[in-house]
Length: 281
Ligand code: DGL
Image (cartoon, rainbow, N blue to C red; front, side, top):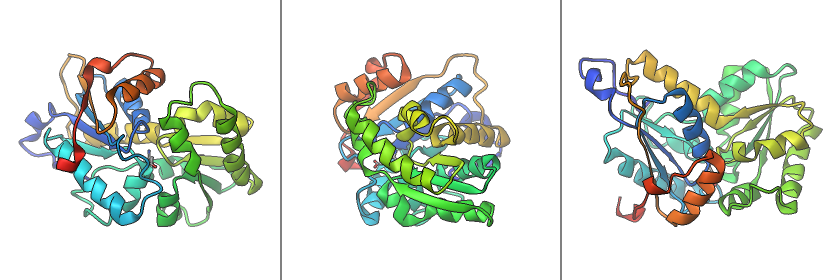
């Protein structure tokens, strides 16, 4: 899964950074959790903000972008690469074999959902491309063939979040969430997977709309825990006592990303945000 084997060179590899990538801001939900639970790790983040959203694009385009994103991350020789994006994860198996693939968000998220559901009815909120791929359905049913899966594409949410309109609950955002979540509640789900990593950014609104009664599975958080476990298994946890660095690269506007990231992360990262031309990779 995009990891090096636990062999003699892992002693040096543990100091290499973790590479995290997404189409934009969404992967920060994974980054935030990872930063908290692995404070000594160095993390390189790439957000393809010039080309977001991926979820409304066709599969070939998403695969091409994914390869470019990974080519860029590879320039840092990361010890692990993490696709902090449901949409990218949904087509990874068409690009990589199991061993060389980056870690994706779908497996860890589904694992948590099947463990939490009581009535076996699981809702999935995700992008259009992810819904089309049926990647969550396939993974959930592989983990437990008795569950029922209801998938809702939520095309409006990524755009609203990327435009920074998530701090105050705008009527536009609230209405969209009510429609998407309402559809899943009508099926009697007791668990909803936030299957696009952007959605945990508006988790409080989704919680409110679902009356606080539903298990909400945060794909960013679940995957961060999974990444830590994987690193521990492979003896790749950075044993430094220093706090690790975080560097952010984006293909779009630095200021917009920095401003929105600050709202979500709760601290200023602008000194560590850099712009790159992703078309060159
Ligand atoms: N964070 C991405 C995901 O998890 C957003 C996809 C998009 O860019 O539309 O699916």
